[in-house]
Image 1: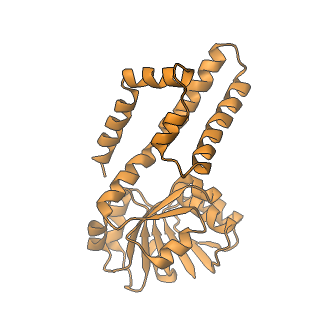
Image 2: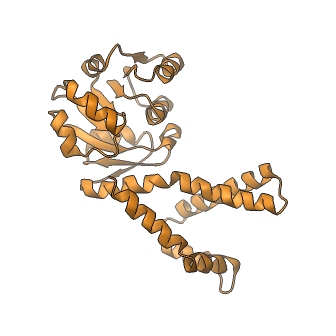
Length: 252
């Protein structure tokens, strides 16, 4: 099978890296020449990658085509390209829905997928809409697949993917506080990474418990966890989080 990637940004690089770490059998991967520096790095690193002369050549040579350009660029280039009906189209574009994609691409085989950078490590959730057996089998090699029938629901998942930077900022604030108390920065950062890694893994290990139950079980009456949770709730920390999600949801 030949794959083609329109757009050679961070997500494309991560997906390709995950593919070559997996057991997926790929004949050739064609990438667009738009970002020349990234395209050259990928082609030097992986022998099965070829930089296409132009986007139409990439489409013609590929069985599956991954749309990984920005929304602005996508609107400009998609209307100029021709897609045969037997091609599978997988869109990573966040703000262009299936209805709008079908205005440019006359095919019934169009899917929206939400990959995150962790896909390069074959980790993390991957949203697929609508459900499809072959698409699911492919991405199951690269992470944990969640199939969504209703595209409107996928907007909510797109919104939560915007919490990567805030999550890392929580790491930063925590480690920075440790530094202010006299801990060496390298120790503070390593400790914080291990703390949140353990918490994340614990939530997976205890997946028979709901997240609400984990919140309850991690507290003791009058203990430090109960105190901090109450303080953050009182100061509307979590309500602000919900407001941020609601505001970003409107953009999709």
